Length: 90
Image (tube, rainbow, N blue to C red; front, side, top):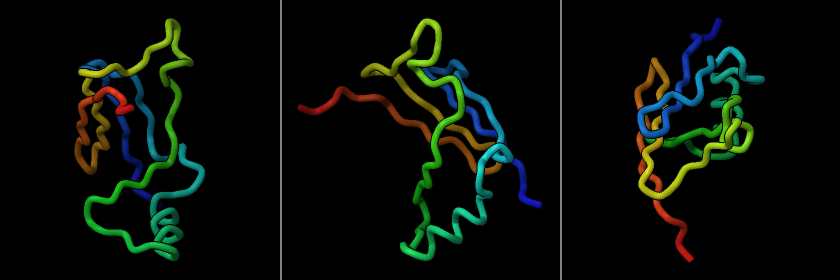
């Protein structure tokens, strides 16, 4: 069986999403195997699979990221990806 990992998303330090990888439709090993058929994966690559519940427009009141915010995505077995939000370039 695949290792079940917990994924947590924080916006400015506040937890806004929490889920586990066992809820994915396809397992992480099968995703990696499939993607590897058409592209070479390298260290640092990110595989985006969608988002769990709790996204901005579905919240009451809605919650959107703004320039200056910091979003963190943590996967307990892997680490934390932290990015500042910047204004859209015209």
